[in-house]
Picture (tube, rainbow, N blue to C red):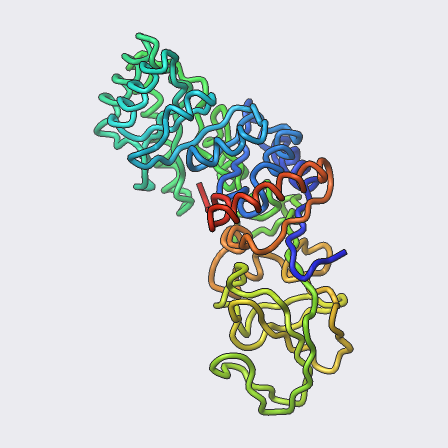
Length: 400
């Protein structure tokens, strides 16, 4: 039964998407990226579904996200790559979490903690190859890779991988980054390191740039059934959207021509019409910018969102159609079901599908269907309780 508001997560779609992408890409290893609470879908249930689909690595942004996977009993290899100055490297090392390191300082910090613990830390070095975010600058490669190799020789580090990230700006820019990454691999060999895991591509490059695949790819948005491309939708890629965001009509009101709607009256009825109130708003992640542009589906018909999206609600113009309180409203889901997509909401809001699914807030219950749905529901309840205790949602965030 549809709740007042809910995000229905199809774990079977996640599993199938991973298996399908692996069949197309063919790398020895596949990392499923489940940061940002699994792009808003639920990190633990998605991780389990992705592993069932054939992924053999999991990727998260920070150590807390990795520890949450371990706390849920997931023992698959996990990489965490974004660390603050007070990162708990000891907890990560103890939990067998791989650490992505981006500086000589981090290499030294992790080696020191590993020495205190009396066990080597498994690390992967991130190189800067053109995106200009975190990563070791090429001018520092010899120093950092040499330092990591020295710590590996004395048993403080195990340097398992080398990675970077593409800007997805243009073919020429991506090829330049690939060339840079190739130099980084050569520098690692020159430093005396044996690199088992080399990874550069996320979903977009994994699908369209075979030269970027190396021994592993990091699959993010694709495993959730969303396309990373503007010229191909999910169906074109053989993917199924895993999230359907929906609720129920909370009120129906008949208004006359000229009536203003919601704050600031940025939409007025041009004819007598009927408005349906939907109990989701920007507090739930519905983009305020999508007013007068996005659409929803009610009883198999799509209708426009009109007027300001408020914190808890927005309005839909249903014309003369017979819409009633309690009718199911689908904001976005799988296009094959005849409903709007996250990509369409992204276009309406001037953003991308990554943003739309990831921003769905903690107030919206996740309901899981498909394999392991019962286990996932238990996990979702625990995550919700944790969010209540901390005053915030489980860790969330878009592209790697």
